[in-house]
Length: 120
Image 1 (cartoon, rainbow, N blue to C red):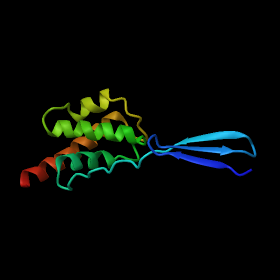
Image 2: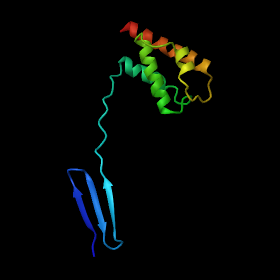
Image 3: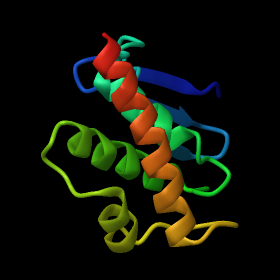
Image 4: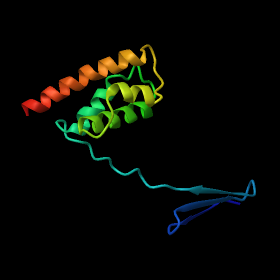
């Protein structure tokens, strides 16, 4: 006896009944992920997250880099903490660098971005 396949489109469920093995398998289907709008290259957001991505070797966890980028963005907007406070309180997983070295390098990168913003 052949297998029976049903698709319930209103609920996005695929039901397969296999008569040979006498069992039913249910698969939930999902939609494609939504498109992500990228920031322009000269935006403050892009520059902030680019700084965080430069430390990919020292911050191996992507979520740590995302949190760092967000904190840098807030700092550049005048709403957040200094890099020393960010690194001290954020509990990042660091690899091959101390908190003090990371804070120093972040300050250098942030100063470069501030100089770029002054010329624009």
